[in-house]
Length: 223
Image (cartoon, rainbow, N blue to C red; front, top):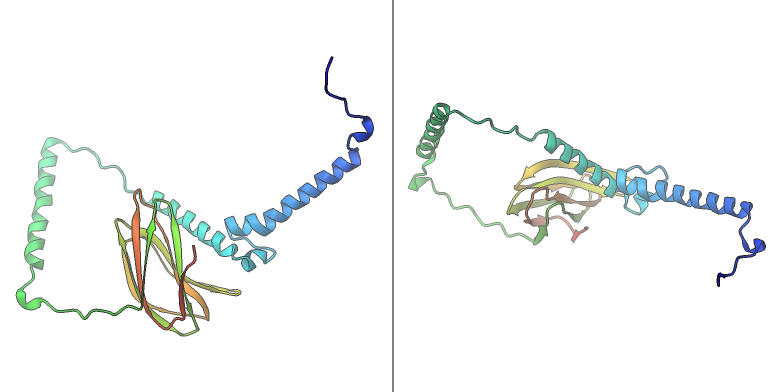
């Protein structure tokens, strides 16, 4: 004999109840897809909720980085072919000559040394990125304001996107792949947040150091 009690027929859900539960589950899944998944993953925001919750910008960045990764893979150099002993000797001889000439050409003279004035930066923000990680730092600026910046990568290179955003506005100033440093002046196209996004596509940790000064009221690490 079995100890478990068999449920009564009246206790089982009816076909109508099962259908209603299925329809409600489908509607909930559709709402989550349109309001959350599409903006956060693909930058598609048909309802406008994603931009309000700042998920559309996340999706745009993910799509840009995916495109950059695909471009990096397509641009990978072919594997070098092996050389015969004779060809290898010629290649070594030819490769050895240019560095000697270059060293002679660029050898500095004592009189060519120039002292560069040291820049007094307002803020300095170091960020460590593990392989595959990304981070974003923004300046709060009014339209037309200018901020001088310089950033450098210790231990490798990064992909970057210099951009800005505000309510119903966004702009991309500059993008790059495999860059170890950058500097210049960032001029705000509109009042809002303007700054940089970096992604470490290498195989080891890197450290990004950002230095800024100029016309901004706040600097903040967004992610």
